[in-house]
Length: 311
Ligand SMILES: CC(C)(COP(=O)(O)OP(=O)(O)OC[C@H]1O[C@@H](n2cnc3c(N)ncnc32)[C@H](O)[C@@H]1OP(=O)(O)O)[C@@H](O)C(=O)NCCC(=O)NCCS
Image (cartoon, rainbow, N blue to C red; front, top):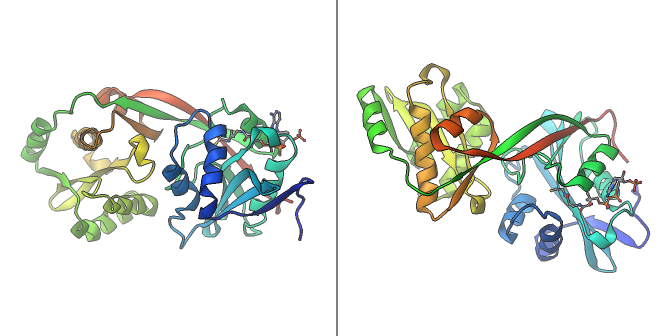
């Protein structure tokens, strides 16, 4: 089936060699973000979990000049898809390019895909939803039939002083809780912990911390079993990205989460980050109370129910 393309333009699959041109468009169009080419490459071409997710990026060209792009991701086992990052150069707007790019990514999704969400791709997202100040993008999503279903926030924190972890770690030791950085030898324990407590998505994110040296994962143990974890720098490292973190329900209230949060923020500070981002929160008052994090961004989450393939 051939899909509509506005006259004078061509649409084709992108590949990593297009990165410079894609970055030029992204740097212009994502005017609220400060992103690097490395971050864009991570978002568009680091197809994490390629056993479960299918990634495509389409690019629109006008006489050999890149005019726009859109990313599409699907997870067939979940019958779900994502419209990832997208942008069209200012001179090429309102000619139907974004609509045509959407038809191309949607055409790659399995026919039984039930729902598509904007932007919030698990384990590899720049933004966990649409910042409504991207007003043209909001208009586009609504014209494509997406509906806003909830919102979420990113918090931010300045990393001026290190958090005082020694005292609380000693106190917890008195209660039989040990805190330490993870090592690759912990993988077996992590499998058991995540299987019981937080599921395979967070298990996968914990695994990504072993790409960093030292691993950007801190653990709490009781009776040699993992009871809590906190991670950072699994993506968007340039922004000082924190998370995920979690404490098993029966161990909440001991003060474990606070220390694990502080250890990650101290790591980021030691690495030279002036600020950290706590994305897609979650327990706002916990982060505000223990690290004075503040709500910095608000995102609207959009999704669209699919009854049949879009064209
Ligand atoms: C959003 C964006 C991709 C739209 O690209 P585009 O090629 O101009 O979009 P299209 O021409 O395909 O528009 C399709 C429909 O979307 C809606 N739309 C798009 N831009 C709009 C605008 N400025 N005002 C009102 N509606 C708009 C319209 O309904 C339009 O259909 P119509 O022209 O028949 O009325 C482009 O404005 C852009 O790059 N914005 C900045 C990037 C961005 O915000 N990305 C998301 C954040 S990561």
